[in-house]
Every structure is written in C-alpha cells, then in structure tokens.
View (cartoon, one colour):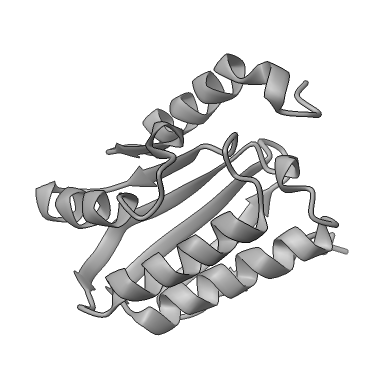
Length: 153
C-alpha cells in the first residue's frame, strides 16, 4: 500500500507543489498561464503548510519555485503576489528561508526579477536557470546562516 504524504500537496491545472521531506525543500512548479488565482492558491497552501507544522517554518530549509513551463503571466499576478508576499512575510519569520526561482528565458527572468522586489530580503532570493542551481543556492545559504536555522543536520 503506498504511503500517504505527511504534508498536504497542491495540484491544479496551473501549479503542482509538495514538501520534499528528504531534502526538506518546498517545491512548486507552475505551468501554462500564471494568474492571480494560481498565486492565491499557492500562498493559501503555504499558509496551511505552516499551520500544519505548528508554525515551524524552519522545517523547510528552502523553497524552489519553477516557472520554466509558464507560457504567460497574467497582468494582475504581480499585485496579487505583492499582497500575499507581504502578508506571509509579516506572519512568518522568513529571513533565513532561501527561495530559488527557476526560469527558462530572459522574459521570465525579468518578470520574476520585478516580483522579487516585493520584499527587502533579496539576499535570500535568487533567480536561477536549473533545479541544480536552485538546490545549490539553498544548500549554500543554509550553510552561511547555519547558526540561525534550527534543526540543520
């Protein structure tokens, strides 16, 4: 009998997300047209994950958001991301939670770069082109801030 995931997963037509317990990385993959509804779904799901971990955001060592399969960004997505990002940053201490944003091309890079300006913690966010770069960024960030991240192996 297959084992059920311990943490809620997110699966819609435009996004898939899960917490990888082996690497302790939150992994989100977008596809198609990225809309405000998709953005709201992801932030609501993250809120539920934080609640299910009793507020322990350090359970996840980092997050990877993969935009490579996105064909288009809805024009209202940026403002929705800004509102939701501000709220989650206010409600959870994310200073030592690295975020890697994986893009395919210059268009995606520029759109995601604009979105990254939402919060002041730019050092913890990085735009990359591969999952390997994303994982390396999270690993090195966690090593750099080891003393501030409880529960590191």
